[in-house]
Image (cartoon, rainbow, N blue to C red; front, side, top):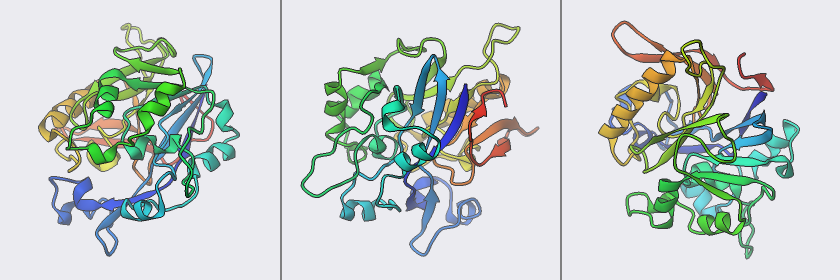
Length: 296
């Protein structure tokens, strides 16, 4: 199996919102803001093939589905569908994608499922053959959003996914579609039922998988958020997220599971380290993956 990092449309968002409880004097050391106080963010997907005999795309980024006014409001940089261009550069067509795994359905993670905006044209799904995996509890949230994050959802998307007849709602550690090749972890601090997908590595002598890759989604958007106290203003429950993140990082460190970041503009993959004072950090940082073997 090989792994590719697949770049989607980039985004610029307010740094204060992205670093919630951290003052600008601190977070500006990690991400330099522009004149409007916005920081650069990637919307990076992960492609794995063959995985459980399939070509699997983890997430789809923000895409280009927004009309021009909303594209400017939400800081989407490019007006074309960068995800599809990046897939083509890696040698894959939309028709080649067998499975799309979605951590959640906020627009910056799922908008890339949709065709680019055209005036007077309804959006459509761009992956015609894919089975879509979404956490069951989160899909229920998407059908009836809370006011806290209602604006983060794409109203038409749940219906489009259901209409394919290829939607699997995941409610446990493993899915029917991918079996034991991908293990799912769940988190509620950012949004209810956030689903973190771990591509399972070899089984260690202790009987536990070791050395895989986990898609961190919005539990840990990038390297600065590996520091446990750092959360986003977009998180629904910061204290819960901190507790979830600490337990998650302890587990990934113990099993040497690599972290895959969707929003870090400079780093796709890294290993977890822990300092003597208990602070988590990263090492062996990799900016991009090009047909990289899982164990590499």
